[in-house]
Amino acid sequence: MRKKLPIGIQTFREIREEEYYYVDKSSFARQLIDQGKYYFLSRPRRFGKSLFLDTVKELFEGNEPLFRGLFIHDQWNWSVSHPVIRISFGEGVVKSGGELKERISELLLHHQRQLGVTCEAASNAGCFLELIRKTHQKFGQRVVILVDEYDKPILDNIESPEIALEIREKLKDIYSVIKGADAHVKFAFLTGVSKFSKVSLFSGLNNLKDITLDQRYSAICGYTDSDLDNVFAPELEGLDRSEIRQWYNGYNWLGDAVYNPFDLLLLFDQRQFRPWWFETGTPTFLIKLLSQRQQFTPDLAKIMAPESLLSTFDVGNIPVEALLFQTGYLTIDFARFLPGRLELTLRYPNKEVQSSLNDSLLQVLSQDPMVPAVNVSRLYDILMADDLFALRELFHSFFASIPHDWYRKNQLAGYEGYYASIFYSYFAALGLEITVEDTTNRGRIDMTVRFNRRIYLFEFKVVEMVPEGKALAQLKSRGYAEKYRQYGEPITLVGVEFSRESRNIVGFEVEAA
Image (cartoon, rainbow, N blue to C red; front, top):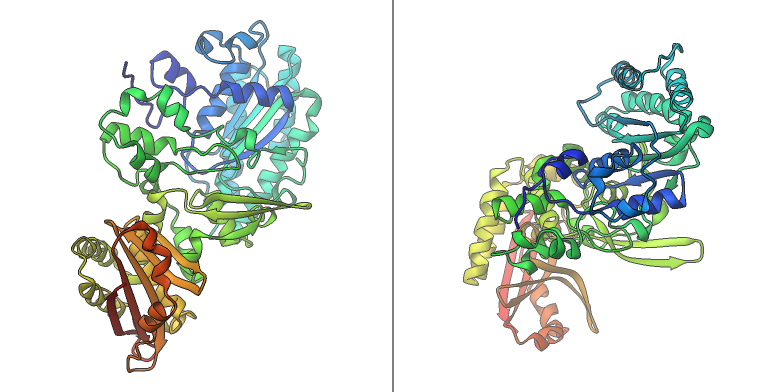
């Protein structure tokens, strides 16, 4: 039987009482409560963090009817309830330390009224500690503390370091209270998008257990394939299951891979494959940072980094790898455990992120969003027609349209990597199957594209003003096509040569292998 889709709904009670689809996450709540007390979880936006916190809230408050039929119902003592203090910074935008102070004061006042206690302390930190102690005394049960979007005030100001630092210090002052109130706390759980280093933000709350990369909780947010089969089966009719996986599955935190919930709910509602999650607000800061750091885009599909680097996130120190991973634009492909060290290889989670992120980068490069939009559409038609010489015209036109000032500022301009990056981003914006620097027994192929039952092997070279034929010659002399003959599909060799002086294509050779 089909139910209502909980699009944008983060309230557990509403979902259960109004008979929306619900994926039972109560087993994770049971496990957390049984095994510890203080937790931290980082997940990208719109992944269900707020709904999970609300589920925990209703559980501790003892609202038994909401959990009937769920995993935890027969494993919970419903005769005992705990007071809950839930703080969320998800609403609105904090623009200064003063505004944050006011926001915290409002949240504390709300909980004083809701719990029927009064704070006398002048400072927010003092009031928070007093609120926890008095609530414990009044109800005779220790307090549950849930903090949602703990980092949003900082992220809202990440492009203004002085303001972000001021906000960070005020948040640190508040969060440190939780550890000091240990005797009065039953359970504490903080969630957010980013994972700020413990030294910078949680120095006063260093007893948090970080479950971000705990394989037992990989599916604590998001939907698994099993969830689709058992919960959303009525919505799957008429949709290609393989295409659903390619577009929206693939997020991994060392355990079961999961789908982005927001994507699937919009897919089931609209019955169209579109970048639903990406369109809801990719931070301009992210795109700007990638552009400023002149990121070699093919590397995004195969970044390797130690876990420590992915946790090194702070105001004024934001590794691109950490930012992309924590915000959901890259996910874990492979984990290698070394003595005292975890080494991770990252990749795009799915076709949605690969195509949308590269399209956004092309828009910044061209300084006109319509240029890549038109060119990507044209690229698709060219590939469908297998008209490779039209491909030369397309890219020649695009390189000619790039502002001269961009070349002057870009350190990669004039090198093979720059031109390969542009080609790659266009093909990636179409969501095609691409392999860069594919290894053979004779060397590495610059770029391999598989589409419409055809295989294209690209080699890029930078030459002087006159084409030299080196790119195609290398493809042929090293026998790069041999690796792909097993697929029984037509193979086309494409040698592309660029002039460092004219900054455009001067040689373009195509030959069937």
